[in-house]
Length: 292
Image (cartoon, rainbow, N blue to C red; front, side, top):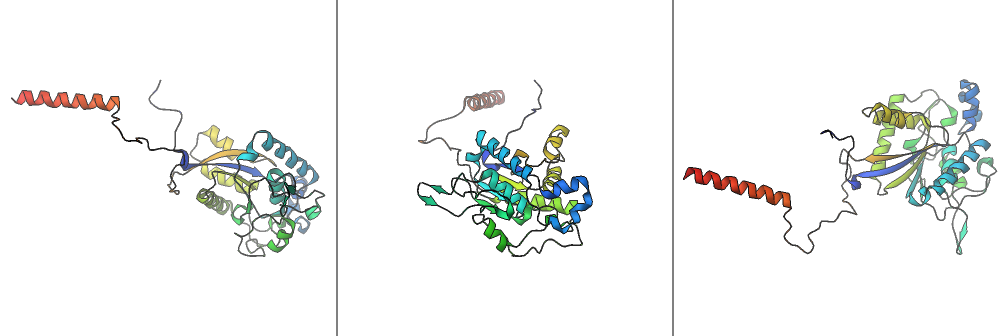
């Protein structure tokens, strides 16, 4: 066995699990596959999920339920665009709007954006939070421009939009496209923000561009196999689970599992320390005898 370990350890309270999801197929994905210039068309403004995309949502929902992820996720963060919010509530939302006599506003209303889908419950599921920082690459393409928050609130009543400062979209401009470098920097700041959250297991429903360019930055120093696994482009409705590690000591919380021991207090000198102590005492005694 060599001296260099192929594994690594890190304190659990300085780690967080993030489940990254790209939105389901949108109408703009279908159009741009045939003609990339279609992304410039106004008809794809804030593109919605296709019928095939909703089938992808249903399949991912079944997967997260089967593997137990549904019960583990403490927060769902989503980009405030139609396709990401549709995907997020479809995958992680509750089963119905009435449980044990308690009703609540739905995460998504029935037939939202002419989707033909039933309402999605906000009961028995984690809270949902819309965050501008995890939007797709900004500018030029109408599909990446959002609607007003006022309109979204009528479609997604139980999603929390409180972190979004302006009702109208002031980040998207028609003549300037965000650079890949700027996109990656924004994505890394978003990941840093995730670390400040108290939740330990978070699902993020976002976009391929932001995911790919952000993860390329993070994985640049990884082994090539890991780098490829982490940063390759996401398929529609693909989920990847990663561990976020606080290497820069952003967090200050102590572990909720660690236990200090020695309660009640008592003698607990480890045997190897005792051996070392005995060895030092014997050396000291020998040196004194030589001096005499």
